[in-house]
Length: 178
Image 1 (cartoon, rainbow, N blue to C red):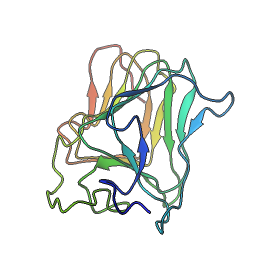
Image 2 (image 1 turned 30 degrees about the horizontal axis):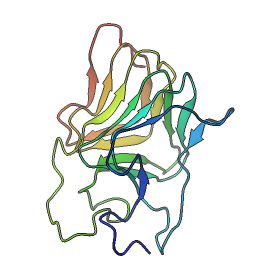
Image 3 (image 1 turned 135 degrees about the horizontal axis):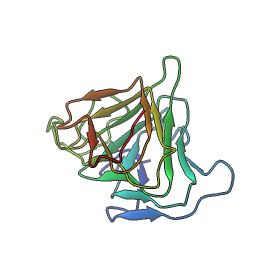
Image 4 (image 1 turned 90 degrees about the vertical axis):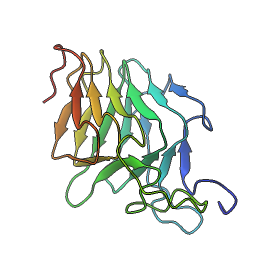
């Protein structure tokens, strides 16, 4: 059981260090699946360091389900890859602060009662070479940048940005989100 861990979540990253995903299986790419663990149904994922996608057109896919990904001061960044976070119906894919106790299982198991706030984590960064990313029925909460776009053209539809310093942030004139 995760009773002696700081976080009750499945870690994405390298235990607090930044982590680069540089290869995925052919075909569907890397997928973040729904997991049940230690009594939690659909356990929360936790960015345990900044996670960089650098896969040359392979996708990190977050399937159509109510998946929650939490972060503490880190970013999910894509360069030469794709992040596909697409939900439908009543499902949502939520990217939020580790301090957000309103969604997912409580990620922090310590007695920290700090409330989530803007700038708790960096956000999602889409860089040049990543024109296939899509965010459909997603929520981005308590970040500094929301979704930052630099020289790319992701699709962002039916998504909500809550308590971020920026919702959708374009870093240059070559960004063309749909």
